[in-house]
Length: 202
Image 1 (cartoon, rainbow, N blue to C red):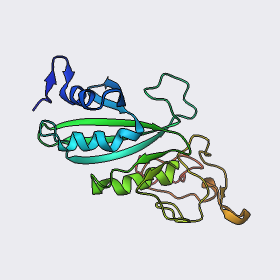
Image 2: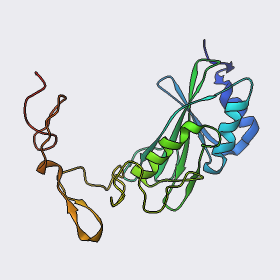
Image 3: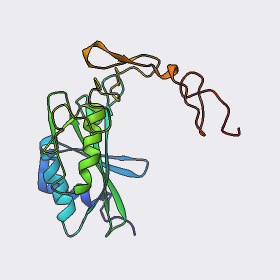
Image 4: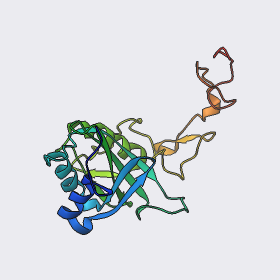
């Protein structure tokens, strides 16, 4: 079933603009997908509207991901170092919609756990790997989600080493570099990165 349209524009964009005005910063169409770029402070209200509106019913939370644009020099949809992108799905219309917000260090993003219980773990992952804080879904002090509790930094930030360097732990200790522990696996293998034994059958 095709998603509903109002003229040449998706119904979702029309209704969000009518309801939230300038909080809808931009509507982007890219490769057949629609992105609603909204003010960070309005995120929870916009998503609640998309979920509860009887004409839209974006009632399925698929995922949220983080992006670090700290070293990106090209055109952007939003200002702010990081973007958090929410992937929502309407079972009624069999349609997908992305909602994006921008955030800088020291700012918080409203958590969507009160709207979708499934948002808890993806938000915690973005927090653990990027350092983005979700208000209402904060990590406990000295407790990481995916990483060891004594891990230093956020490994998906652009300034973080890509590999081949020792991992810094508290108290001045360092863990082994990636190439110090070759670990063959059945997938692709890169010399000095994930092992060099040819066990994939290629």
